[in-house]
Length: 220
Image (cartoon, rainbow, N blue to C red):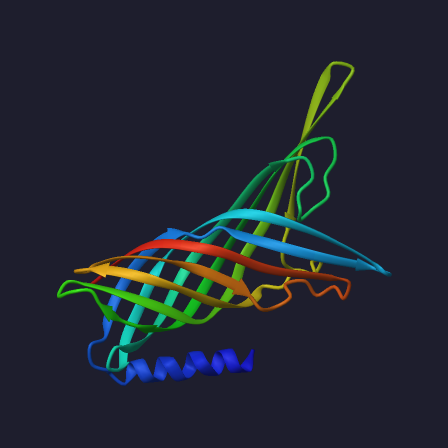
């Protein structure tokens, strides 16, 4: 992780030096995430996954390094949500239950990009680089309804994803890559991010994240 933060610090310092052709942009989009879990007990290994819908919005600052090569430093907020009936991937519930899991994260991507001109007003830019993510909050709300002798009773409970009683880790480091297409000041972009860290501190459980992202942006 020290290397990741070193990259972020060096990039931020470079951008603050006032590179020519620097551009500030705003963006928003859709970024679902799949959390894949591998559990090992003795010689037996089982796998499971949980898919959450995700939405993000943020800003980025793109500066030219040399020629068509640039680097973009961004910060964005990301909201993940999953609603399911029955057992959740994060907590074990029973009975007629409905669980809603929510997360709010902050992402800091640092992306090298190379611009390919498609005329005077358009360009295509493939990009690749690390993205550091930190989960600010995470919670699973479980609503359970039990019917006994024709009478229904409902209970509601909340389970924090992070904290002293949880093995979930807040910090993640991903490799992100993709491409953007820009026409005038508008751009569309998409790609894939692959988590590189284990998000569970339990020695017998390994959880990693991955997912696509699609977005729209505007350069100010």
